[in-house]
Image (tube, rainbow, N blue to C red; front, top):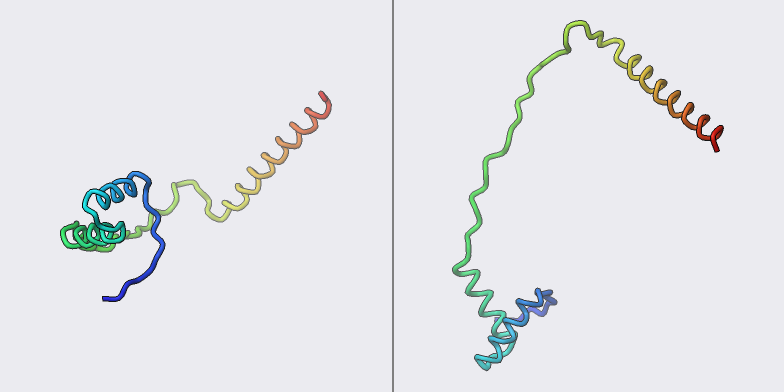
Length: 98
């Protein structure tokens, strides 16, 4: 079996525990990490079966009675103008006070 060299970032607590096991058993850190990984892979949780795809069924809902869909852009423009006028008035008022 060939070895693959890699960098692995471990949580401090986990690294200390692996080092403690290595000292206690007289094995190298590398041997301890490899044996723990092998054990976890052999006895660990198996991947869950994939879930069926989530599907959304679109349904036509339409607009409420009285809503003129041809004037929606006009309503949006009017609301935007009102916001602009309100902001402009606030700026003028703050300059007059300051």
